[in-house]
Amino acid sequence: MKRIAHKAKWMMVAAGASLLVACTAMDTTGSGVVGIERKQYMSSLISEAELYQTATSQYNTMVSQARAQSALDVNATQTKRVRAIAQRLIQQVGVFRPDAQNWNWEIHVFKSNEVNAWCMPGGKMAVYTGLIDKTKATDDELAAVIGHEMAHALREHSREQMSQQMATNLGLSVLSAVTGSALVGDLGSTLTDVMFSLPNSRTHEMEADRLGVELAARAGYDPRAAITLWQKMAQLSNGGTPEFLSTHPSPASRINDLQLAAQRVMPLYEQNKGR
Image 1 (cartoon, helix red, strand yellow):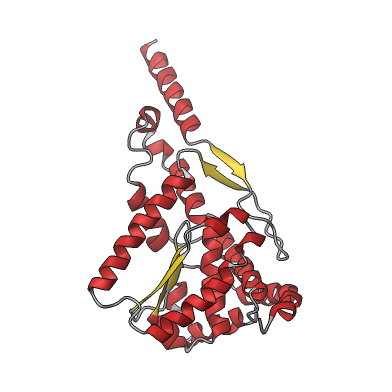
Image 2 (cartoon, rainbow, N blue to C red):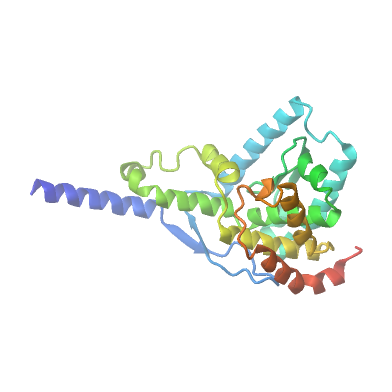
């Protein structure tokens, strides 16, 4: 009898925890010409506003550290170029989600040999000098990579991944879930893991590729540059996985998918090029 009562107790605990991490199906963005229509599931425990606040705090810390190390926006011409490209892309985000037009978008160039770029929840961005210098990226190619990273933020991939982590870890912390303690844990460290340590899924990468290509085309940048950029980075890695893609799994069909997406948005590029 005690064993049955104990089992029933933990079934109730598990049920309560499941309610806490219950995810809601939602559309974070419009489908666009490239046709992104996948429903996403977000945990109610991860507030969009709180996540943006956490991301902003982390970003400000990184910016301050880079400034203290004389590694922030050291080349004025380079920084101006990156910001001009980003601004044209930002002007197009309303096509996918109108609320993103009101985000406090910000971008800096970090001095680093790493071939990398990223965009945090809420629109805080960074491009590393290693990406610009080592690939000798054209404006179209920079638009491709910045647009790709912006797409991750627009689709709220970090929030989605954090929601999935909570569901996965439920069985390891059932009691904590019921009491509300330690399930969310340190939001900042979880965001850091998702942003800089854990790999994006193939689905997330495909969506960022496609949405990024459309953002670039609408901003008047050649969408085919996404293909040449990945090819350049592969050459830097001697045919292996490019450094930039080390945490961005690239399926064998990636180039083909980019080619198809670029073809689909070419009319948008033709309408907007030279702007």
